[in-house]
Length: 290
Ligand code: GRG
Image (tube, rainbow, N blue to C red; front, side, top):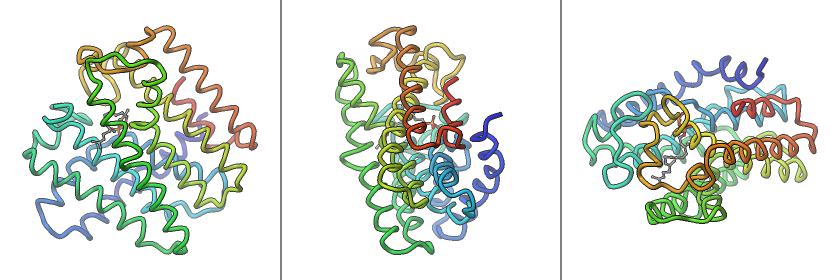
C-alpha cells in the first residue's frame, strides 16, 4: 500500500479539472488560454502540488484538501511554465513533452513564451486570491517567488546552460540540481508545512527532507534517462548524456549513482522519523524511488 499514491488518486481528477476550470473562467484572451491549457492539460505527474497537499494532510489530517487546490495549483503553473520555456529552441530545443508536441512546436516560439509568462504570472493570482490570512499569503508568495526566481530555479537553469559541454564537479552538480529541480520541490513542502502550521522543529526537518527529495528526484530522472525505455520527461533516452549535460550519472556512472540515490532517500526518511512523520502520507512519497 502506498498512501501517497492513494491520496493522489483520490484527488487527481478533481484537481486537474479544477485547474482547467479556473483558467477557463479567469483567462479571457482565447489564444493565451489555449497555450496555457495545452501544456497544463497534457498530464504530468503533479508531484509538486501533491507534495504540498500531502505535507499539509500529514500535519493536519482533518484539513479540507480541496480548499488548498489553488495554492497547490500555483506550484504546478510555475512548473509547467518552466517546462515550456526549457523546451524552447533557444534553451533545450525539445520537440516532445508530456507525450505530445512541445508548446512551441504546436504553436510558435513567440506564443510559447507568452504561454509560459502567463502561467508564471497567474500562479501569483492564485496564491493571493484565496481565503487564507494575509500574513500566510505573503509568506507563500515569498517562498514560491524565491524558489522559482533568480536565486532558485532560474539560477539552476543558468548554471546548467552555461556549463553544458563542460564537466562540473560533484559538488557543483549537486548545487545545480538543488537549484534547478530542488528549489520548487522544497517550496512545495514548505508551503504545505506553512498551511499545516508546522512548528519550527517540524519545519526544519521538513526542509531537509525536501532538499533530499529534490536531489533524489533529479538523480532518479537522470537514471531513467539512461536506463529507462523513456525518461519521465518524455525525452529520448540518453539525450542528456549525448548533449553533455552535467548529471550524477554522467559523473559517477550508473551503479554509484543508484547507491547515492538510495543513501539520499534513506536520509530523507530519517528526517521524517525525527519528527514522527515516518508513517505519514508524505513518507510514502519516497516509495516513488523504489
Ligand atoms: C526555463 C526558468 C526555466 C527553468 C527550467 C524545470 C526546468 C528549469 C527545466 C526542465 C527540464 C529539466 C531536466 C528539469 C529537471 C527537473 C525535472 C525532472 C523536471 C520534470 O519534472 P517532472 O518529471 O515532469 O515532474 P512532469 O511532466 O511529470 O510534470
